[in-house]
Length: 186
Image (cartoon, rainbow, N blue to C red):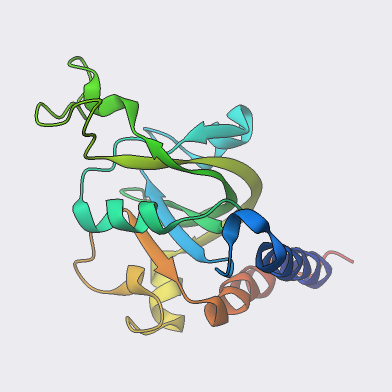
């Protein structure tokens, strides 16, 4: 990503944030940012680019589920490749539908099946996401060099949550890492 692309993407995200403030479905909420992890051999940013839209199923941690419940249509998430060599941020996606029931909890053949969950009382919710853009990988090591655990939870030693909030003031700094690691292509 060259400097021009960085500025364009940064402006797009700011524009999305401004429209989210005025969006009736978000009410008084402002757009939020997230980091969502997936193992690339299970589902990668390339898979999302091909599919364009998918549900983010299979989250079985209560804190991560609660973050999913907090998401609103229009929020933006970094797509993070976990359990990869190296792990890191691989792209951007947008939340296009929230408060969905995760259908895998009812499927006895799914590894995400939850015997205690029922259609009348589902325990697991999810969101639908839409591909925005691939990014040159920002490795976890690079993120650790740049951010403290208080600034970006994914750099915290032992953090295993698959869904994490990202503070809005950190977004440009994350995107700037791409602009710095790719030679200017003017």
